[in-house]
Structure formats: C-alpha cells, structure tokens
Image (cartoon, rainbow, N blue to C red; front, side, top):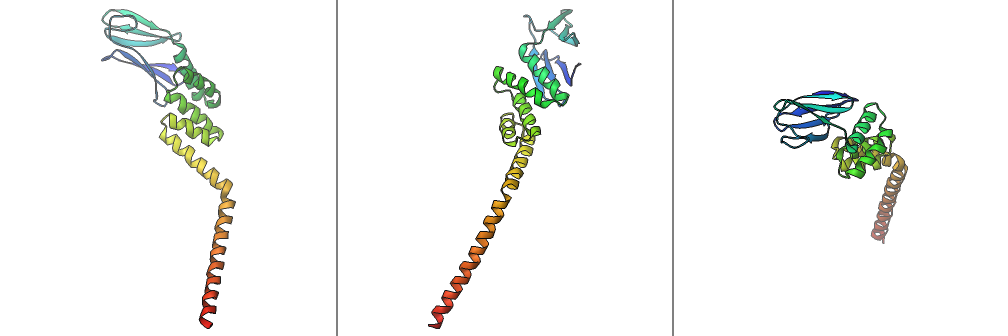
Length: 186
C-alpha cells in the first residue's frame, strides 16, 4: 500500500494483479492494472510506490517496473478528493461536474456534489445528487433538514389552518345542537 497524499492511498491485489485507489473515507475511487502479458498488466505485482505523481508497480516474476501516469479522469477525481480532504467542498463541485461529463454514473461525484450542497444549505439539490450517488446516510440528513425547513417556513400556515378547522368544527357543532334543540321544542 502507498499513501499518495490528500487522503488518497493505493494498494495492490496480488491475486488479480489490480491496483485499487481509495480516499480517506474508504471510498473506492478507481481500479487499474490486472494479470496478463500485455502492457499495463503484471505476472505477480509485488510492491507499489508513488514517484512524482506516477504509480510504479514492481512485477516480481518479470523483475520489471511498470509505470502508470494518471489519466485526465483520475486527475479530476484526485483533485476533487484533495479539495474535499482539505475541507473545500464548494471548490470541488466544479471538478466533480467535470467527472460527471466523463462518467455520468459516477456515484462518488454525485455524493461529492450532494455533500457540497448539503453544507451550503441547498437541501433539495443535495437530496437529488445524494440519491444519484446512493449515499443513504447523507440523503437522510438532507431530507430531514429539507423537511424541517419546509415545516419552519410553513408553520404559520399549518397552525392557522388547524385553528380555523377547530373553530369551524366547534361552530358547526354548536349550530347543529341549537337546530336540534329548536326542533324538539316545536
């Protein structure tokens, strides 16, 4: 395993020969590599290191180093995760939107955007992105805050409406009792 800075780390799976990259929360960012004989694959990955922003994997069987350069997609994800790691979720939104242009089903990008909207107080938009990002816990938080905001904004209407209904019901009952009383006396 190699720590790559900004809460990002990569590790190798020797059985499948793949490199998995995660963020500081344990979210899978991307996977690359594999077992094989073509370029970018290994016979037996033994060690991994980050040298100057490039991932270098030692193939123990072939005794060679395989170097990987970060793609545009990976770079966008790395930069967005780094901004979020530094607490600047609002700045990360633009990068996450660029990730969505390359992969509109990227759950991590939707979750990142949803968290930024949640922090900014735009709960409705946060719910939309968090639902697409399958982030149930954060969606629940956004939903609860959105519901409370709606109740707070409309509490006067709800209470006034309830009061009017109670008064109307009381008046109706009183009128009905008087009509029944008048009919009995006649």
